[in-house]
Image 1 (tube, one colour):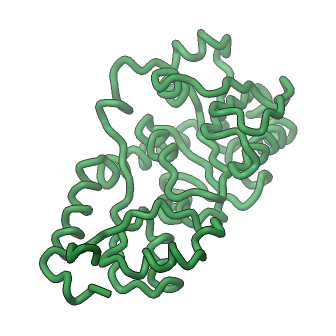
Image 2: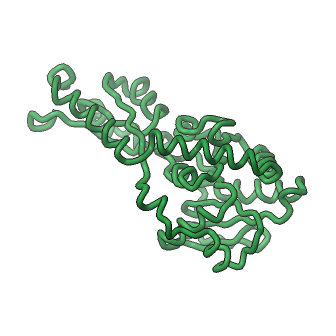
Image 3: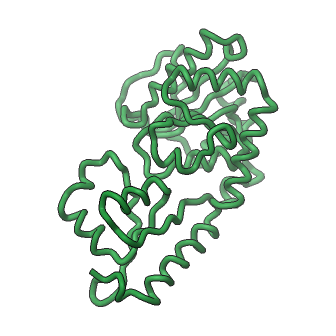
Length: 266
């Protein structure tokens, strides 16, 4: 408790961040009356590592007025960047080593080399250019940081979202792709991704570029499967990941510590 008021923390926690073990942060975590975690993976860390007795999973969400706006146009994105009808794999995130964008490059290259269905596949990379490492034309098309409207057009244009990152607090790009009914392939080593993706239902969790390449080829060869997986993701968003859902779970957690803060005060 601070100033005799119950306190809940939303840490936006990255499990691999060494700052987590600093005494100052550990003290904050342990003194909070409640931790509002974004995923089950994060909740387990606060239960087991920090031994916190009151952790609630609230998740994260998207705004339907933004992600489902009728003005979004994948066709406009394809025309703007002269992509024609080529299948598109989209990487959406900062271009830096921690986001493992080069795993996405390798996955697309492997898919092209090994599977006839992926020979025309294009990789589009969108995000801030942190490492300043140029991409060769055969690696992908790097567009840098785009406006929100252009990002939404890219999500609508793509055939699959690839997120190879292992350092995430949640993974909003997955929700955004699902909202546009796109299948997602994510890194199985990322705890938050394992918490929100049901493998073989609303997406795929793969451990390496070879596994991602196989999934890319599979969904390009089986468009009905790609549609089914993307639609399952869409239903996941509608059922759990709109902001009103997150607000309700947050309010329920806060109401709990308001009713009985003394039992949890440190």
